[in-house]
Image (tube, rainbow, N blue to C red; front, side, top):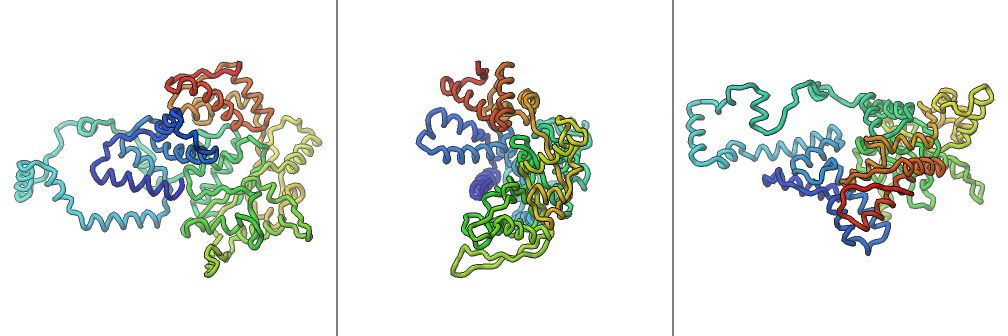
Length: 466
């Protein structure tokens, strides 16, 4: 979430709670956005502006958990539970609240909220050292439900353990709710994030064709772990070169406490590693890899922040706790391993996950254009298998968050159904185009838009390509 949007949200909702507005009902912003779109409220904005607004509203609406409206209290608790805070940030917030508590007389507040007669009785009881009234004489469970109007949870929960934290299995299960298949990649990602949380840096390479879910794994994790940063590899340039985004910007654009604890995911890294020789004979790819090598080595790196050219500032980054993930198609690497496997008796249908153990440091150097010094520092290599039409058919039929059908339906608060023929056509086209779920999502959105245009108030839509 963008900093200003987040600041506006927390400021507005904390003020509501502090003014006794915790029970105020707020409509899901996506509901309002959809109504505004239906009324032509965004016809004058460009496609890029519309996409930016859509992304912001969609992210904010997560706090409503697909409900059309919810109370301020529920929204704030959901937002807080999804926000990653470092220990020092928790202590800072606790310190601010402690200072505010010190100047607040909670007892006086309570007495002021009581009627005069009840407050006078409470003060009289206090002088006699009498305790406040005890709950009625019936079991705790019934008292909680009668007093507060909700059902309590009496079984053991993860939060009953004071040492509760993310385990590899919990991270893996979370991914399983959002990403189809690719078990080896999900397990590898879960272990990397877990080790990173424990202070053990890890580096990983993920190779797979377009549309197989390699980047989606990290986008999904990024929603839960804010220290994950995904960057587009081909846009990177070295310090001193022309270009809008340099390697140093990965770190300098983040807050100081974030810089040294990130998981940096380089998307389309294979294009970054491809030889790029300029007219002067300089191999730009090798130069960028030189910069990455300093970071992956875990050294302390000094960058010059030239935002203020009259007074440039230096920033030292300790890279000992920064993990790196390189994602890309790496076609030459995958093709070479598939060819070599066929030559020793494996069929072409062998799952590529079985080939992961055969990928060596030498393969990364020969077929991935990766410097040996970097290849030797990659702890885990995963080769993802392409998804076929049957896979995309299963994804669309899934009832959880994996399905693009469920995702779009949840965003709009509607029901969407596809006939079997349409579903199969979409699955085959997604496989042939190699665009995967992005293709399916785009086609479903287009069909839905056509029906919403005709009747924006219906709640059930049956989509068909017939």
